[in-house]
Length: 70
Image 1 (cartoon, rainbow, N blue to C red):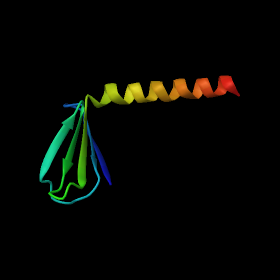
Image 2: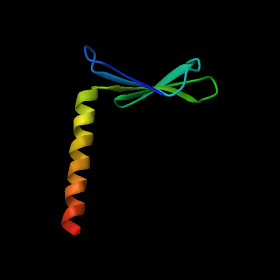
Image 3: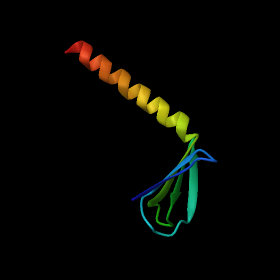
Image 4: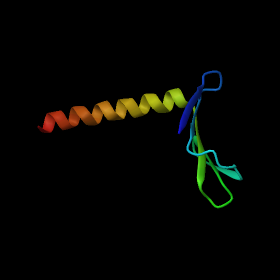
């Protein structure tokens, strides 16, 4: 697995395999590239800095909620 970040485009790319890409599908800010057999090869996360910021905030919020219950 390889992970690359393009700062100029703010895209996080996660290469799952080195198989040949046949087609891609977009779902919101995520583009998934597939082989002809439908196996995912590459994930692209658009607006990656905003996405990762929201993931971290959600994780911290969940951690705080768990500590309040304990």
